[in-house]
Amino acid sequence: MGEEMEVKIIPVIHNISSVQKLIDMARLSFGFGYKNIIITKAYGGAAQNGVAEVFKISLKENKGVVVLPDLKDVIDLYNPKKVILIDKENSKDEIDIVNPPVNNDLMLVFNGSDSSFSPSEISLGEPYYIKGVKGKIGSVAEAALLLYAYSKFLA
View 1 (cartoon, one colour):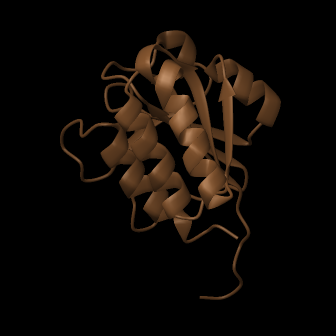
View 2 (cartoon, rainbow, N blue to C red):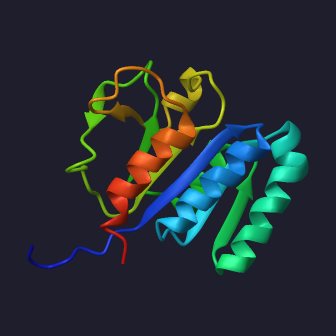
């Protein structure tokens, strides 16, 4: 396969209220070898209980958790070269999970709610969806496919 490329990929779960979904997203990220997960715009149960549970999991796994108020904050602080928003309704392109497009310093943003990203959120990145997936499958399933696909590029 030639030389391995070291790639920095940052998973982000945005706009989340479900405790279980937040825990599942953290377990997926850590299980596939990602060093950190970023949580933005957590509210309701996710903010009250989910964030604490994710911190417990991260401590056990020796991984990192960053919690920020909004998506713009994480983009400003991390300044990734490419921001991919996983959004079925607004996608203009698809990611082939067999051969995903790779950029060093890539941020993958999953929407924790059942709605699409807002127009102001869409303006912060590029909306993509998963090639071959016909319907909306939810952020945990989307993350499972994409975090696995990109895990082969992790250092």
